[in-house]
Image (cartoon, rainbow, N blue to C red; front, side, top):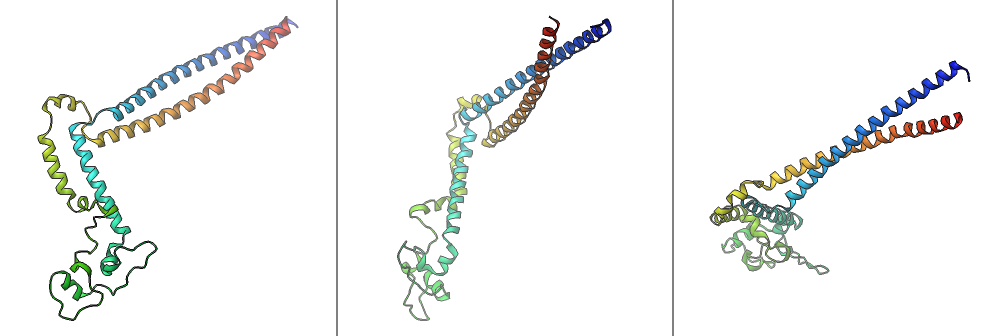
Length: 236
């Protein structure tokens, strides 16, 4: 190998070494950034766990109770829709169909029926398919089986108002300083947890990108190391 070729070869080797060092530094920087992001993610997960485990404050207990009443009221309303209340009021005797049985058929509710269930005597003549119980059995306040929650539907707002007033009287003054450091509402927790969820998703995307960059940079180092080894063996 003449001097000129040797100089070129040494220069190429030096450039390759510098390139490898530069890549190593870039990888080290990425690894450091990855550790920082992982630490931030761990802190967010710890905060989320604390929000789930932290006892409810006085105001949150009141909100929970109100939301429970609203949920049961909504459930009852949905069941009335599934039960097809309007149709069953129009044809009252079909209010409780028996699975596998035969429901009694009657003609639809008319004005004479309306007057009758309101306590007025019939003037147009008796009906063979009279409304049972003088109207007391019409399917409005359904209190059997899955319809036991009717009171939440009709009186939920009154329940919430009275119970909240009562619970305020039962508040423990000594726990005020503890409650002030807690979330004020369940919605506060929900909002913070949603923000944590979105932030963690963003961090996970960053971590995926860093992993891709590290893998991309690692390949030239491996190839460069193999090339240096081959060169060294060739010179020995």
